[in-house]
Length: 79
Image (cartoon, rainbow, N blue to C red):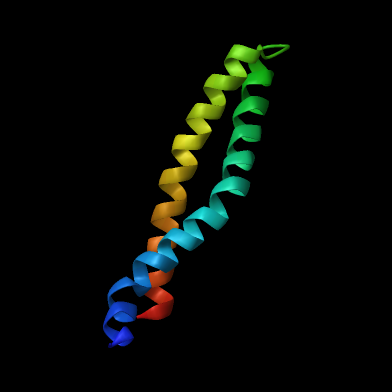
């Protein structure tokens, strides 16, 4: 059985998924902290409901950023 064909086919998607997963958690936390700090500038305290909605926004933004960055990185480094 030829594993080189499978390796060539799934090499880029696997690395993109791995890098996206590795970047997701720190990027989401960083974006969430930035959102909360910006909200605190306008308000004195941020409610728990606001924190949850900001966390959802940060999650979506982090997913998009990590996938795009990982795709560009893998294309530049491995090809």
